[in-house]
Image 1 (cartoon, one colour):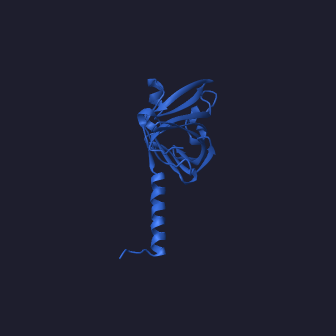
Image 2 (spheres, helix red, strand yellow):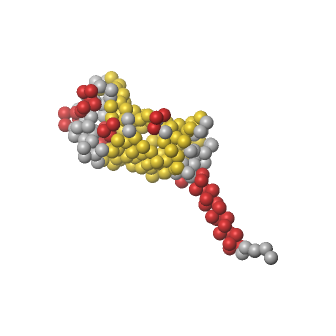
Image 3 (cartoon, helix red, strand yellow):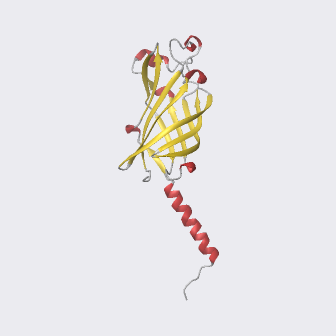
Length: 193
């Protein structure tokens, strides 16, 4: 005698199978730090100056076919900021600038992800720097090359909204208020799109 499954058991099995398939499609991508970069560009007396963050991490769960179900959490170790010169590198951790003793990390947590087509996405979320949280919209472009997917983008922020550069440094004639944050994140584990 062969076992027979009730319609309810079959339906439950199909739902479980669909859920498992969805979970594998939504598998978390892994950041490849050695192939990734996060930079910031400021204008000092009208001249662009670039700095980098050496330590950062990302938790990304994204199916490009269903971006609205994705989640992105990004953390930067603010004390890892460098402008490639000892004098500014010694100033950046101080209370006037990043105050890394009190605020060691900057974070971005997505609240929604919208697909725009052609590997382009708009990620909305909360950006927190130096104890200040603001809404941010981050344009992201994904490009696949073999098993690696690269996410790139540039987002503008106002440094004074996050109290970066206080007191005499709040004067924007020396250091502009506008800051461009550029990122290139290499990821493994993303399905084909």
